[in-house]
Structures are given as structure tokens and as C-alpha cells.
Length: 298
Image 1 (cartoon, rainbow, N blue to C red):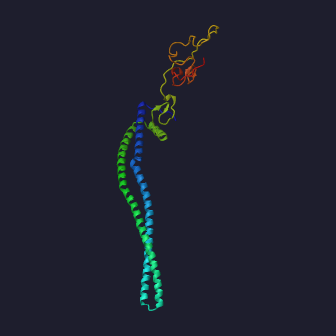
Image 2 (cartoon, rainbow, N blue to C red):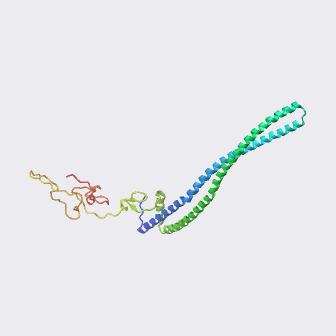
Image 3 (cartoon, helix red, strand yellow):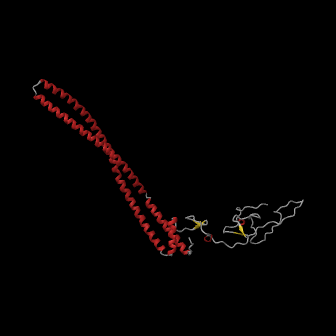
């Protein structure tokens, strides 16, 4: 992508524009993560769980009620047969027929007793299942006022955020109108790609996207004097004294290129490397950064 030059005023406007866009993202994030929204989601989960449990409990209660009605119908049938046999015995003059009817009445009496026992058990089960379903229904009803309170709080905060968002949007439109169209288009493309359209440089790159900037966009480099490698004159070996580079006088000229106090020893080389006796890049040479040099042998 070709570089686009922009005045300092327009760059400042882009940074202001980015601050407003960041504010809009923060407002949207707040609106999507309100505590009331989490409360409503929790209430919805509780309501779904309680409704499912209530459906199961009501189903069991209805089944028990159906069984109770069946038993009551069976008891009614037995009682009707008992009443009919009693009439037949009263109107019969045959001893043999009367004895048969009395045997049938005894069987009907036992059948009715068994049905009535079952009927009592089912009635107790119906009452118990109904009580359980009533408790669940009560828990479900208690969620309604809590849901109303959460919805009211959510709507109030969303209204506040919407008013804040409208103010930020108005300010953004005002600033965007003062930015050149081509520069604004570039800003929008960068924002769509990286999420951030403009950011101050830091460490030789964009502080937001991390994209490295060309050397021309970094800090200006001041003219540097020619840097030469200094070495001591070669001493003639002697049997009376050992050769010492440190004891020999230096041939480095005094002035701007001479090493400062505390600088690296003579013969040190910058980590940036040298071309034609000059240190490349904007980074200070090794002799100007004590503690970060690589000493030569000697």
C-alpha cells in the first residue's frame, strides 16, 4: 500500500476519531454485557427448568386422577350389581337361586372392598402429586416479579447508553467532516482490517496493529559524524616488557568521534553493523550505548 502523507492537524483529527470509535465500541460492549441481561438469562433458564419439571409433575398428577376415576367407576359398577342382586334375592322364592345370589353378593362385597382400598391409595397419591405440582407452580410464579424488575433496569440503562452513543456519533460526524475524503477512506479501511484505524507509533510500529512502519515514518535521525575504528599502534616486542595494547597511546582523534568516558573499549563494533565506516539506521551506535556492545579481542 502506498504511503499517504497527512498534516499533523489531520493526524490529530484521526486520533480523535479513533477515540470516538473506541468509545462507541465500549458503549456497545456495555450494552451487550449489562448485569440485568445476565439476570434475565438466568431467570429464563430457571423458568425453563421449572416449566419442564411442572409438566412432568402435572402429567403424573393427571395420570393419578385418571386412575382414580377408573376405580370410582369400577366401584360404582360393583355397587350397582350388589343392589341388583339384593332385589333379586328379595323377589326370589327359590332356595337354590337365593343361595347362588348370596355367593355372588359375597364375591361382589370382596371386590368392592379391594377397589375401595385401591381408591384410597390413589386418592392419597393424587393429593401428594398435586401438592408437589403446586410448589413448583409457586416457584415459577415467583420468577415473574424478578423478571419485570430486571427488564425495567435493563431498559433504563440501555436508554442511558443510547443517549451517550448518540452524542458520540454526533461528535464523530463533526470531526469526520473535517478530514480529507481520501484520508478518511484509508482510515476506515484500516479500521475494518485491524479494528483500529489510527494509533500513535510505538517501538518502530503501530501501537494498535503491530505493523512495522518504514524507517522514514519513525523518529528523525540527526546527522552523525563519521565513525571509525580506533586501534593502538603496534608496539615492538621487547624482552624487558610485554606487549600491551592498553599501554600504547591511542590514534583516535580528539573531537566528536572520540569515545566518551565510560564508552566501549577501543575496537568495539556496533550490533547494527557498519557500511563504509558509518553506522546504519536510527539506533545509536554501540560506542554511544554503554553496556550493549560486543568487545573486540585484545
